[in-house]
Each structure stands twice: as C-alpha cells, then as structure tokens.
Amino acid sequence: MRRAILALGWLVLLAAPAAAQAPCPTDFQGQSAAVTCSCAPEAAMSGTVWGSGTYTTDSRICRAAVHAGAIPATGGVIVVTPAPGLPAYAGSAANGITTSNYGPWSASFTVVAPASAAAACPATFQNQAGLLTCACTTEAALSGTVWGSGIYTADSRICRAAIHAGAIPATGGTVNVVPAPGQQAYAGSVANGITTSNYGPWSASFSFATASAQAAACPANFEGQTAPVTCACTPDQAMTGSVWGTGVYTTDSRVCRAAVHAGIIAASGGVVNVVPVPGQTTYAGSAAHGITSSNYGAWGASFTFRR
Image (tube, rainbow, N blue to C red; front, top):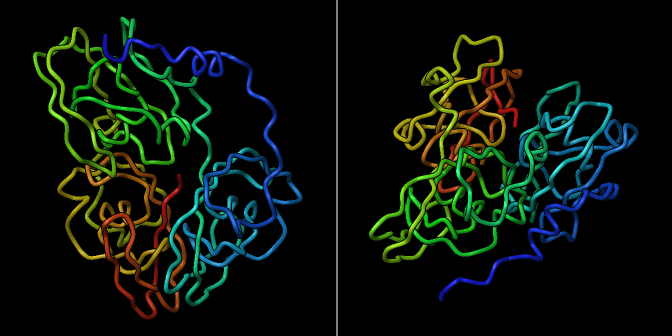
C-alpha cells in the first residue's frame, strides 16, 4: 500500500529530549542553511549590525536578534535563516539596539524566535482524533510530501502542508491542526513555494485553523500610530497597495503588503505584530517574497514587525 512506511526514526527524534543549543556563530558569512543556536547575554549586546529585519551576513547575529525582537538583551535561542542579498540595507533603532545603513551586499539573514511554546508536531496527522496545537521547526517545514490543498490527506507532512496553506512561513511556527473527514479526491496545487499532489479517496484528512479571527483587522497603513499593534491581514490586504522600505517601512506603506515583503506572513494573510520605529533619512526598496517595495527619502515615522 502506498505511503505505508511510518517515519519511526523521525518520531523517535521528536520524542527525545532536546539537546542544549550550540552557541551562535559571530556572523552568518558562508552559511547556506538555517541554523538554530543560542545567544549569550554578552553576544547579544556587542558588535555591529547593518539593516532592519533583513541583515547583512557580516552583522553580529545575536545583536541583530535583539534588534529584531527575537530575544531580549539577556539572550536566548534563535533561528537564523539565509536570505538573498539586497541593494540597500536601512538601519533603525529598535529594542535598545541601533543598526546602520549599508549599500549592496551579496547575502543576508533573518532571525526569529523558535516556536517553543508548543510541543513539536508529529510528522503526519495519522491516528490523531482531536485538535492539535504544535510547533514546526524550519527543517520539518521544508521536508516531506503533501497531498491536497486546504484539506490534506492525514499522511501528508503537517509542517510542509502548513506552509502551503499559509499557516506559517518557511521558517516554521506554531500551527493549529484540525481533523477533517476523508475526501473522495484531493487536488494538488502550488502555493507559498510548496507544490502538493493530487490523490483519490483517503479515509481521513486535516486542515489548519488560523489565529486571524482572534485579532482586529489591520489598518491600511500605520500613520498616526504610536504604540505596537497586533492585527490580522486578509489575503486582499496582503497583496494590494504600495510599500516603501525594507525591514523598516514608511508609515504610509500598506501594513499587510509590507508584512508579506518582510516574510512575516504569506500572501494568504495572517496575524502580525506591528511596532512603531523612528523616521529614517532614507528607505531602500527591494524585491522579497513576491513583493517589490520602493525607495524613498526622509520620512517622519516608520514601522517594523516583531516576530
């Protein structure tokens, strides 16, 4: 029978206690894969950083993590993910750290906190009977086969399906997995960089519940805001409007489209944490995650996103 081999080794690994994380490298130069590592307080508070949200690879990783809101100044565990080089990097002040502007650089990185609040997701949803809240690592989110779109066969890889559904970005995150009845047919599709496959009848399925309904709708832009805002982006908001900047955006930029550009949400929308930051003397546009933002000069106020 197809796909009958269970990923026992995978499940054993998930059940094993997590080893202490290795210390983060000083910078991300020469790295080509995501790294989960630990920042000591000393590493978190020393060194130079260029950029906002997306940083040059020679920036100090742990100091960038504090700036991005992934960890406090006391340190912690982070996930560092490679990103394309940008034509310009805009510095900003956030979380007690001031980063610098820079011009073109060949490679970048982003940094987020790991999804540690929930237990690790099982490889698949086979034999699950109720709602499951679990955490997808970067590695789990980028491996395995998926059948269906929106509703997936129970033997599809949960974390890869979650990216396809727009429930999490490719860097992972926490998901709410909902059991669904078996379907007579499952249609594959391409979404959020993941290609799923067609299949015929399968006895059990799953889908994802999002947190979008628990947050108020995002404003069109961030003008006049002076405090952080947690809000929900619809798919329409996520894919319409103009954006100026990279990582740090002018307050008249469309919030939800900027969130897609920053890699905070997929084009299907989701919940974002928007944080006010000071105005910049210049904003560098770039192309990221299917969105092209524009350059701009001085603007009185800005916003960024807390991951």
